[in-house]
Image 1 (tube, rainbow, N blue to C red):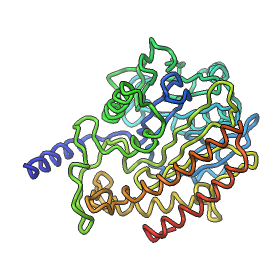
Image 2: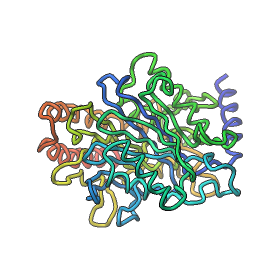
Image 3: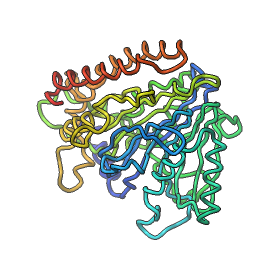
Image 4: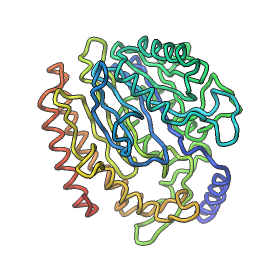
Length: 418
């Protein structure tokens, strides 16, 4: 019986690999503070891109400092892929492929990702509220006659505002997670299509189904806490369309490779980072905005909470080191090579499941999770102190120092790297 299930799995998986999905294929959700356990809203983005090498920076913008994920090769940090600023304004995007109508083959996003990245840079350096972002988009449209965009922008501010902006070349449509008419359950999901666009061009349906199922169940259970999103949704091994759960096929151990088709899950070979930006309650110090950040592959890298500090501190392992790389991201790459060892053909579509998860508990993901457990345990104590004091302080710097030491020790002990 199990053999037949495996055969069926491989047949369905092969069918999934026939089409060519967009490489820039992010998954996102925004959640109103009205439905979260602690009253704080958050935006989430799981970033999929061929440009895998990311890291975290703090930038002094024209008006505000901001913390953001950028590409390693972007030495000037001009293109931002998610982040927040010291005013408590946060932004992330997903590529949409249907907001500007049908384009020539391969040209669904004719203006390139750089337009989105630079727009988010401008937003973080200049915006404090959703109204400021409205004004920024309106001013760009007025000055250039086009927004050069085909994207969904997730935006929140320190006043509790939280919206998606479905943004095409000719304008934008807002979807408000605080509006019960637009978000009856207090959350809104976007993958790679907009609801105001040409629905025949929708992309990212499989991942939309996967996260929609999770969010709907969590909403009915009144459990829309941020932690399972950054820790579980980023590593969800149930396919949204086929409903196949790879945990059902976990091998006994990792003594020999066991390959499975791995296409259109929320985590993918193309997943380069994930970030959940947790805002503040109205009246709280915007400096308490937290970016729960996985700076590399979610299957090989733990989530770390990050704040904007007065000294612009960051854990050394998530930002540029002396060689211009992020040490933790490079370590995650080495582990990901064990998950996707086939480099020829369509090797990126096949995962060595035995190295990811197995009944012996030696899978890479199974060893990342306890590292993350300790990070979250320590982080919660720090956050409790910071919120009690009303601002970020020396506790943050001490926590970052501990993270650097602890993660280095764990990766050396468990994987013999770092």
